Image (cartoon, rainbow, N blue to C red; front, side, top):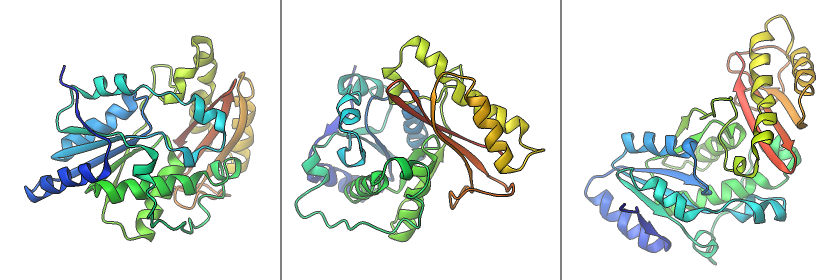
Amino acid sequence: MNLPLTFSCASDLRKFLEAERISGKGIGFVPTMGALHEGHLDLVRIAVEENDRVVVSIFVNPTQFNNSIDLEKYPRTLDKDLQLLADLPKVIVFHPTKDEVYPEDDKFQPIDLNGLDEVMEGTFRPGHFQGVVHVVHNLFQIVEPDNAYFGLKDYQQLAIIKWMVKKLNLRVSIVECETRRESSGLALSSRNLRLNQKEKEDSTIIYSTLKYLQSNYKDLSPLEAKHEAIAFFNRGKLELEYLEIVDPVTLKQIVSWKDGAVCCIAAYCGEVRLIDNMIIC
């Protein structure tokens, strides 16, 4: 098995990619925090189809964790990750230290996120999205990709990254990729590694709630549909943190149905926090 070429030094990666660009190659980028699963690999496969070279970053970003215990318990499986990427052509891995991503001369300045960071995840994880845009901005500066690939499972994060790119006029195309799910409907997540089989079964209430809402919203207002969905969710065993039906661009709660309206859920299965979403109409 030939493991992918791996860089830990940002300057070395820049030199390598500059030579690739000079030879006319387009660069794709898939940022991850490791503990790779088929959802990540879907992103990488799409990137491989659309680019001459694909950088996969593996970096557990401390600035986006509000809970130090959550950061400590976040799975780190670098050897397995490299093996999973070994069969994919065109892929190189960037596995930096914190100092490589956040150098002493870091020029990033916090940006106004237009209120996108003040709802849902932002309510329960203050400062989280400033950490996300900081790390993604810095990784973009290192990799300078033509295209960057993100999963729709992290819907709010994706909306915020698209806003950042527009706000800072960054020269990168953001490519949205569908959520990969287990056969039960549970969205694939690195955090699923912390769930036992019974907890995985209990967690399917998230997907069931989203499908229930998608099938039953038409005769209800968004507020009525939200209440119905919460009641359905509460038949399960998870602890609901929030369930919101929002505008797909502004992420604000809607009072009447519109194309692309999305329901976002966050819930706890024991100590493990899970998120998911689904476009309702």
